[in-house]
Amino acid sequence: MSLTYFKRYQMELDLQTLDIPTSELPGGYRFAAWSEDDLTRHAEIKHISFRNEIDANVFTCFRDVEGCQRLLREISGRSNFLPDATWLLEYDDPTTETTTTVGTIQALVDVQQRGAIQNIGIHPDHRGHGLGTSLLFKCFTYVKARGLSRVMLEVTSQNIGALRLYKRLGFRIIKTVYKPAPIFTY
Image 1 (cartoon, rainbow, N blue to C red):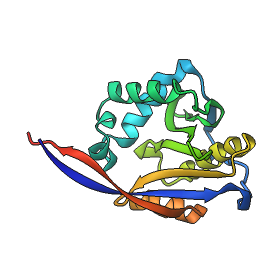
Image 2 (image 1 turned 60 degrees about the vertical axis):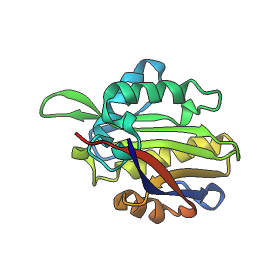
Image 3 (image 1 turned 90 degrees about the vertical axis):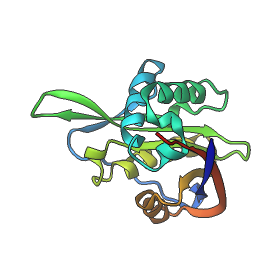
Image 4 (image 1 turned 120 degrees about the vertical axis):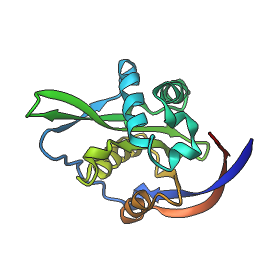
């Protein structure tokens, strides 16, 4: 098996200098707080959000729902998991009268006592409405309430949309890392 390396940025935001706005959502959208009962919904939307993205090459667990479930069980089972900074985003579709899960975010406390965002995913059909920003602000509010003054995340350098969002919010690159990933040939 061959490996390729993906360039990733570790980014950090100082929450002490950020006036976190109230998380505003467009009509029909609402937040759902973490519940162990919703682990499968988190996994399903994580899979939908990442399966066709560059990160599915970096993290093979994103390629199927079962991999996402394993990842979420691992994240939520850790002693440093932040359930109050972990959210689902739901959409009530008025035309079909159904509720759909369209976003997810999870967070931990890292060894440097920062909020560490593990994943933020938005369903491709619901991107471009500020939902990622709203999920981040919701997460930041609870990270800051825990007394943590900084938040960090890691992003693949080719994920231009996410990089643009993080930089707009004030994240700065603090380190460049290279993540090895297998090259699959079919």
